[in-house]
Length: 83
Image (cartoon, rainbow, N blue to C red):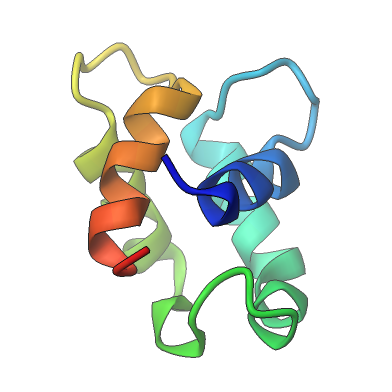
């Protein structure tokens, strides 16, 4: 799993509990997305609205428990963003 996935996961983990919720992903990408893109943490084309953030969450939530672990998240973003 890539270092970029870890950096992005940590940036999105607003409450720093080691997991991501749908709300965290949406709020963090809305607030931090442009900065993360400028830093090269996420591709600029990877930024989107609420629906895109929600779809990213759904794609990563492999077990359907509505919480993302780093492993679930990294498996999707590494593939989606080509890391």
